[in-house]
Length: 210
Image 1 (cartoon, one colour):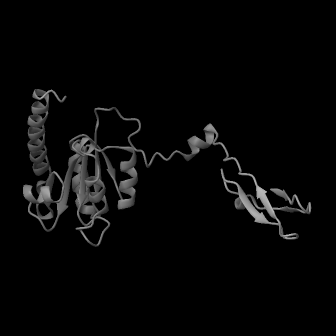
Image 2 (cartoon, one colour):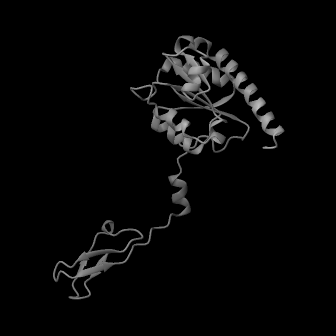
Image 3 (cartoon, rainbow, N blue to C red):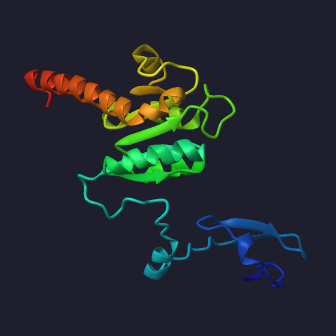
């Protein structure tokens, strides 16, 4: 952009990256030292084609599936365990997203509320008590969180320890020593979850809140 000093009429070129979008800028004239006011640069509009080019389907994997389809997010680093879980979830007709990192998982959850989240407590963290994905899930509003079934894979806690599950803000715990019973434990945990929420919903209905 070419800039002209109003006082001494000197002209010089200013790189576009030095000009703020939506903000008025000022600078001193190199010759007479007076203040030069530079109008704000209008943000460039994005063409429809550019918007399409910017779309990343990997971040939004379920844009085009039917609403009634079940979706699962899997956060497990061990390839053998991951393969076992994927095999079971595939038979249960889940559409599965396998994440490589906590950042990847959080990015996916920005765009989709998963029906099931299977998370290793040590996934992408050196401290299982500080798991970024669990923290994110804990901070969801209850209206959203109650629609997500969270299964925590752990090497510390017993499978189906309901008190510890409550403590960790998850629906079900599966000890990794019992990974061979993944399908059986998951189905039982989900059946108990559905039963408890059926009572909850019926209670709300009797109270006229739904």
